[in-house]
Image (cartoon, rainbow, N blue to C red; front, side):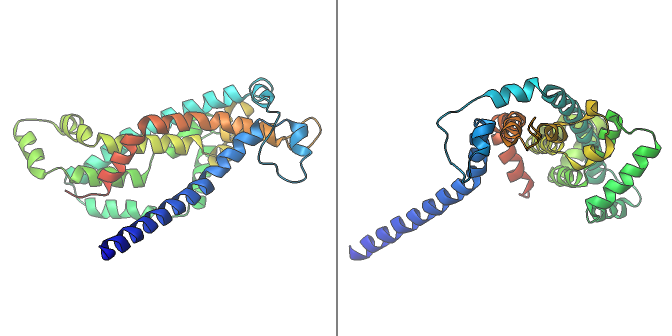
Length: 284
């Protein structure tokens, strides 16, 4: 009895420590979001009059949200970002599916060498890729265009690798049986592999959408006109107030507006994302 009591006490203590650690970790992760929302509902004068940060407000205001939409081109920036993100993600998924199928199921000379070279390209720093892409886009006269924004982002070696691993989990006998029945490679891809890999495809689609939505360096480098700015770049136009000081509450209001679509997207597809990650990390 005493041993059972000691074990139960130790188990309770262990669970308390675990939940305490998780609670503290959750607070640390969620605090920046709380601070962002809190700052966005503070007035400009109230925020700048704080010599010491105040973790609450007794006079919330939504004027920052109204000015973020009325006084800036936030709606235009969000439309540009939707066009850029949706188009880039769609083309990337199609290219990744076709490339992953070729590496997983088709036999051609030098397949392993080409795939190894693809993986080796992941070791190249992004800064070098940006310089090369910038040089190419400028000389093709595609600067300040959606073509210049989209084209360098339609290839993802990691997502091709991820889909290839999923396709290779499907037994070879299924592919051979389909070929005996006269099924074309494209039909096999559409009717068999894509349905079986749907969780992973949804996962990479959402991750690519988030990546495009948060893209900053490449749009900043390739666009000089305000009409092609994305939300990540357009928010910079809110930073200066009429008094010449940084309008932090206005920027935070814009950031909240920009973050909401991604949050809604994650909430809707969170189960699919978890299923895709779990499937990608398993074998058989």
